Length: 242
Ligand code: FPP
Image (cartoon, rainbow, N blue to C red; front, side, top):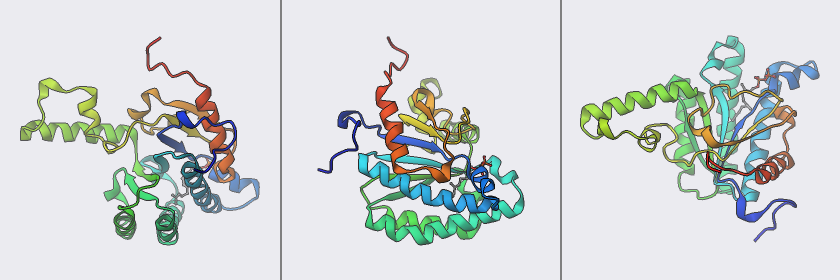
């Protein structure tokens, strides 16, 4: 077995890491470049983050790639992000196959341009048999929207007789969220120093340990993920107990 980076305990690796990849625009601005150049550099950081998760044996990595609020950005930036996503899926799917990465996506995927939806379906289908880390792209994703969609799904279940309205528990509700197949994140990482959840995995992050890094997302290296895990391992998780 490959040895772990120093300072990381093998018996306490987070199963699921969620990342708010913030600071692409500010990173580009520092060099006097267009914001989209920051997003392009951000896509490379996603690949480094996946590799770091593989090194540690993390099972799930969910990255906030496009929020429901991001549709309000200038048309040209939205178009550039969609083109970047399309290119990412084309270019990186062979690498995901080589590295045994399984790709999945959560969010209101039907809002994405048809070509991106098709590309996503292809990459998801192609990588579906892979057994390494699962990379979950949150796209047109909003935590409140997900909760509303979960309530709608529950109501359909009640109408159809599959859900007992009198027996709804947090576990039952979790089963109606986009993330129903994944454990809740153990660790939430946010870059660029902002201390906000920004509508990301609101229900699921109830007990996540939060690590905020000052660094902007395009500068994110594998060592930063390792550092976040070291911090996670120093926390004492009590889940509301003593
Ligand atoms: C936040 O930076 C980042 C986003 C809104 C999009 C995240 C997208 C990527 C990392 C690249 C594409 C990802 C994939 C998977 C292809 P910001 O633009 O809000 O930065 P700012 O706060 O400095 O303005």
